Structure formats: C-alpha cells, structure tokens
Image (cartoon, rainbow, N blue to C red):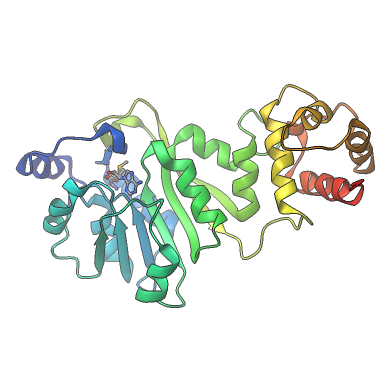
Length: 289
Ligand code: SAM
C-alpha cells in the first residue's frame, strides 16, 4: 500500500513513534490527486534524474522512483532516515542523503553520480526555507532543468506575478530573471498531515538557459529591484535615492528615468523586468564615476 494513503502514513508514524518536528516544517502529503498533479507538472521520464528536497517518510519519493530514472532524496532530519530505509526498501533507484539541502554540494553530486545530466527538482518544500532553497537553486548556476515545488500559496502567487499586481515584488523579478514560472495547482490545507495553517500551491519553474534579460550589470539591476520594493509606496526616484545600496544623485536617477521614457512619478511596482533592466543600463551609462 503506498504511503499517500493516509491510513498507511498513520501506520508508519505509529510504528516508528515519529514525533513531528515543527522546526523542520514537517507537513506530509496525504492526497493522491495532489501527488498526481505534482508528477504531471514535473513531466518526468525514465531518462530523468530527480532531486527531492525533504522526502519526509518517503511518500512522494515512492512515486518519483516509479516515474524517474534516478532519485536523490535529501532529508535534514536524521530521525527520518531509518523510516526511509524501510519505506523505500523496494526502490533501487533512490539514494537518500542525510543533509541540509541548503548546504548539499549539488554540482558535485551530479558530476559524481550522473555526469552531464541536469536535475529536475521536485519537492513539497518546508515553508520556513522555501525562498532560500529556490533562490539557491536559481542563483548558483547549478545543473538544474526545472523546479516543481509545493509552496505556500502566497509565495507561489508572488513568484509568477506581473507588474501592477499586489503580489508583484522582488521575488517575482528574481524568479523570472532565471526561470519561467507556471502555476500548476492550488492545494487546500487538508491535504497534509499535520494540517498547516495556510493553503499551498504547486509551481513549476523551467530554468532558462540564459537570464530572461541581458542587463550590463546584473548586480546593479538587483540593487535597483531591492530598492524599488523596499519602499514600494514611494516613487521609484525617491526609493532609489533613499537606498543605502545605491549612491546615484537625484539628477542621475531622474535623468535615467527620463531616458527610459518612464513618467517622473513612476513607482517600481509598475515596471517590468525588461524596464528595470533598461533603467539599470541607463544608470550604468550615465555614471559619473
Ligand atoms: N516530501 C514529504 C511529503 O510530501 O510528505 C515531506 C514534506 S515536508 C513539507 C518537508 C520535509 O523537508 C520534511 O521531511 C523536513 O524534515 C525536510 N526538511 C526541512 N528542512 C530541510 C532542509 N534544510 N534540507 C532538507 N530537508 C529539509
């Protein structure tokens, strides 16, 4: 009987006297329809190597083992390792790694275990580290092809939001710089054990071979984005002027905003990633040194 059946999950938890550790964001999936939606969104084949972050008791890992060629499952909680040895005993293509996903040497793992492959990351992510894990996978130029993850609904919405919406912000722009997001499903809280206090969503990020915009100075682009959204109710000009990360004069900022053809009172939340990139190039070009 697969673990996705709630009765089976309860039986395993009882057998091992497992105590949920709040610190690790442990909410185990118990809904077969949701599991199917995740698998469909991840578009797996037997050619694929999958990295699962946080296998828990192995519910999703069992299904990943069936659909992919190799599965690397990295779990931080050592009390889950003997349970995984039991629940995944029939899954020869699964390697369980007892480590923190934020520290795992992913490039080393790939070059040792499946050289030349790009991983598909699939996970029901612990909410407390969702953003650091996703940004690590995107920013560190790792061999990753796609990231299909269950996250808190608000975070999924922020990742795929466009200009002028309430969810649009620095996370939307960072994610969309490196990848193309696709919201695959909304997931209510009763699909987990224990039940979290928030709803979830499944999002797939297809990692782009090159960033979606070509800014001359990507570090400057991200400083502008952070500055614009750290004071999102202010005009862009004022937010950039007030940012401790930037040292442009008001004249330089206003000139760059004019050069790009934006209204003088424009707010950062109205600009697309392409427009932020144009602004960073205009500021770079107009630098007084
Ligand atoms: N995949 C399982 C499922 O869907 O039922 C469990 C998902 S649960 C939301 C998150 C899992 O991630 C837990 O097993 C937790 O112990 C693990 N975890 C938390 N922080 C982690 C980290 N930094 N690195 C690796 N695993 C982590």
